[in-house]
Length: 461
Image (cartoon, rainbow, N blue to C red; front, side, top):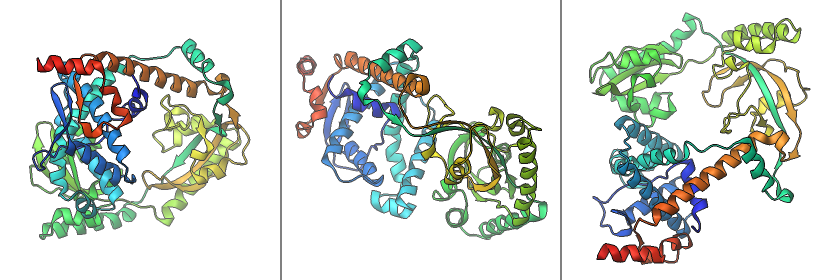
């Protein structure tokens, strides 16, 4: 069917954002899908999300939004037939994650609430039914595509079917390993941060609002904007020290200050629901001192010397000494996080600046000198040195050098076709009617077909 492909790509990435405000707004139906309806407020909420994420005003996006909602509704209705469920904790996690992202983009809770013209608590409850439907749709979609795979022969056929004169050109790519050492603070060095957390706890015990203190002082960026609230989650979602404390306390209780790998926390249990707990916390992260950085500089210099002199293989040194849990049991090799196949080939323009500078003059098989760094994801500082295993210069796509990337593209193409085939079959027996206001939307013309008109007539009969 016309225009399926572009929308199915979006559905593959994630079900899109919307909210259900029908109880609060004078609303109207803009589309009927099987036994369900899509309201103007659904489209408007998705449009608001688009604008909140930095999109420019565009009526065309409303056409796109309605098309996405129709496809998602069809998936969700099949999910209901197949009894696909999502748990309350999954829904809460999704809601909390979306609101955290929106709050971050809006640069604060107050600004976001002003933009939405309602409190985040109200917005969250309005979103819940639609997010539940979206998650069911996504789960059902996964059942369609989960068994899709491509053989080497299919990858070759896909590549040969591409326009050989228009093959993409790839930038320089590298395979790199790293050995990372983070500082360990002494008890005296840690006490500075513990006492800071104790001070915040005392403010709360003396009557200051927990949420206010969290918003102003907690160093957990994900929860601080929510007043420290983490949402419902099972014990396995947390590190063991946090989990032990959260599931020990009664509702309303405030814990003592305790330490985890992230720093010093204290928490309050808001509600228990079976084997899940909703807690809020305040975090004070521990930061390296000059003395602690000096100590690990000596340690990493010693490791570097042993590897450089051939006394210790790089992979063995990484497994034995590196503090990077993601790479140490992979021989220190770094994985391309944007690669679905978890390839170790990384485009150089994706490297952090200090890593790029460290390997820029290396030959394959060489290691850089140790250098200080700060992890952009966690904010943790330390020292590391890097091993250059492979450097592939800029080149036009080829099966020999780029099999993993071509395999991903072939997999995506086959997955998209599987979804398209499913939709084509399903829509033959699914009544869809779109409001005439959207009649000029090119992507919605697919629903104005004789098949749909016949379904409409049979419905009326």
